Length: 462
Image (cartoon, rainbow, N blue to C red; front, side, top):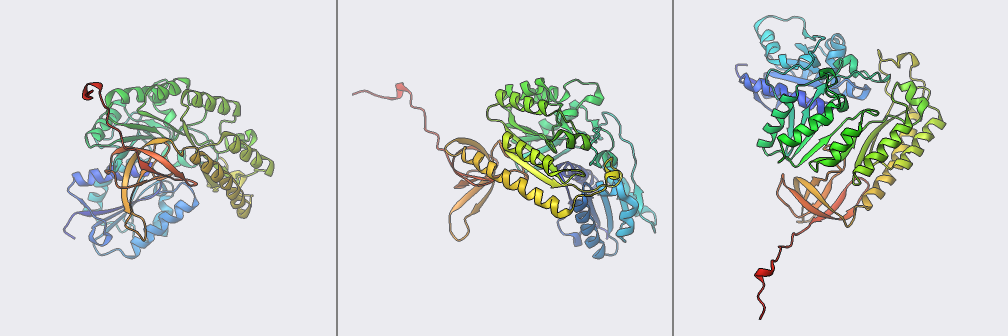
């Protein structure tokens, strides 16, 4: 093939999406064009996810389908988490792969393609360096992923937390923060492109700046962002780590209306013994106290968390403690996962003793409880007016009725609920919506018409 086109499939989380869009930038700068048709591309790239078992299976399936239909002259490159951790295994399971690119050197995508094109490669080219630099800059490449009026900025990569169930440190390495100036530049770039919402992501956003010698680095970064881009409407924080939500961070979030009263803080469990076995923060008094402080400082606070059920050794009593905690705390959003056995993690010696049917039954019980709480929380919004970021237009099936779909401050993209709005307010705009109905996860409403202000000088008295 003499054209230069690439087809890139991004799997997994938003952090992977940022890496994928960064690779796409580099390829575009090298003269490649993106195509949604794998048959039209001369380079096929899959940015894989290898976090848990189902994600691995999906990554293998996508790679195998592309390999089976690969045309003469096409290159197939596997990138990302699955490749970083299981490079040799990936090459064995997917004959036809030409190159493997690790998570820590996505910025070498153009170089890897050039090497594959310039020399015979009867065996796949492995490009899986183990190291990353503290405060590394990314060669001027934007570390953002824009999706309509919202955009993610990755502020750090890797993780230094010791969670027993998690393979991320094995895949990504220890935490490496990005330079503050680069993040600020990206925020300004996104503002100039009309982005209304910036979402800060990392494996652990509350650890930002630790490796750079910063104290309360996330709070400091948020203060800088508010000053640098005062015209970006929303700034959202994801992936906070329990125990590191400081008083200063709470103060900064509460002080600036731009910073949404929303926090995603994966807690993973609520029973202290379970948390100790998981090698997670086990001080539940801290959790209760911090959530109380946050809700006092931000009465409209929306809280998202995630839990793991079926971790080795979890008793029915410990699981019931988790249910009681969820009932008490009434989180706005909850994600639940069954334990996935990951070789090489600290939990490996524990095996996977809890039967799958028990895990699934516990997950169903947890989510049934949360669905009731979510519905009750949503019903409490009826009659209120929420600012909604409009993301899509459509029609009600079987009628000519127009609707729009958007998100309030309570909803992060792709993982939380939606607000379904009568009519079709402009895409990318933030409009006031009076909430008229509630479902388990979503809300419905109508755009609130702003009444013009009438000045006394405009009135004439006969």
